[in-house]
Image (tube, rainbow, N blue to C red):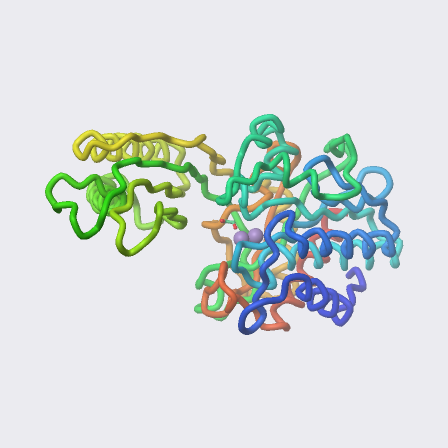
Length: 399
Ligand code: GLV
Ligand code: MN
Ligand code: MN
């Protein structure tokens, strides 16, 4: 077994959390290209150098620590949601760093490390790895905007030390990503490890409805073109129309709403909102898209709203590579016999994009109470260390 150092791993995980530490508990605010994110990536690059890896920051700001020759790639992302926890992404990056260090110290197999940029979708959906894999062109990415209208092109220009070149994926024999589950299953069942068999697909787009801004006291209810009421009607109709199409595993979310001008005494004239939906079946994602478009078109036509759609972003559902997954299963069964399971991922991960370039697999550790994308996200430290050992064990099995 590669001699991973649990104390060093936990100390680095806590050190990374200091960049953007916020909120109660172990919360983090470290969105892509924020000052905290850039400082964290600088810190990470230094740890990579100390581990004997050569640092390559690609054109979008994904940070690679490259081992010589052909290597396995391990990692995840170190940016966070606008309000996030300390482990989402960070765990996979720091576990990768520790395995690379331990392997170098023990003259084990070469291991490279990556922290992808904007996995959390300030601009797109897993933007950094999507561009690397060709799932999203750099030109299209550059035109994407965050919720304040900043473009991806302007944001990535803030990231220092970027190379003009992307890393050649043929130098890697495969990609392993360790992550927190971000759901309730392992915690509820008292299990230590999830070996992912597939990752769901996603679609995401912005929708804008423009009605008429007016005085909230003098404008009769009849004839108002109130953008909030239109969104509310759309949301209710959508749930009804999805009923015959979705399964208990399908999810959809309107997570960001920008209402203009957002004042108590003004009938809102404009709303822009995010519409996101996820499922393991590409056909179903397509049927849901048709329902979304028809429903909002109907609401717009009936109420007299101008309607526009932003670019449709998405990733297809993917299966994990059987050989890499098998190595994780063997390692899990050795370390925690009978206390692991195969499971799908309802969260998106960089592994989805990387699967276009090389074989990929993923492992999960439990999330306490199933909480994630919230300050309360956490995992018991013994579970973090178990995940590290299982990851290191899989690297050895693959060697
Ligand atoms: C990734 O954070 C996702 O939204 O699933
Ligand atoms: Mn993540
Ligand atoms: Mn996340």
